[in-house]
Image (cartoon, rainbow, N blue to C red; front, side, top):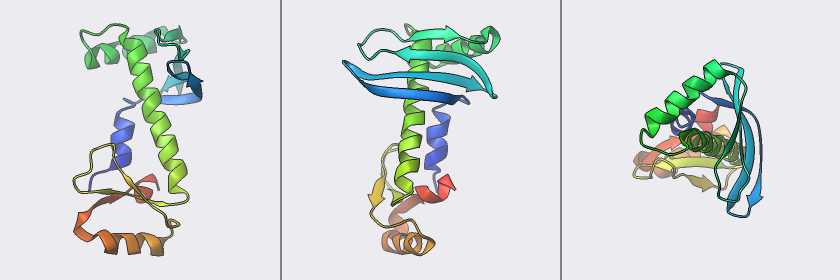
Length: 151
């Protein structure tokens, strides 16, 4: 079975977010997040939600060089690639947070043929008994139960 949660974590490229704040902005989501690598703060990124570039405050120049290298690897011909990488990591972290929150009150499943980002919410408490019922209901159509991947 495909690991839905690991696929989201891969989008974070080994970075974690120490603190993230977000709200609806004029032209999308406004957010601020501090990105860490191996527990060390690398950079704080800020998107004001008005459609301009992401502002960055570097905390560790050596680790930031790795952040820039990863951004250029992902988008070799890109413009302001560091901000784009920060946005991608922030989106993945927000998605994981939302999925974790939903998984506390429902069974989340991904079926064969669903896209990588697609999942379904079965409105049942995520008890072992209910998860077994969901598995029996979907049978071979079931690709994974996301609740089990979250632990």
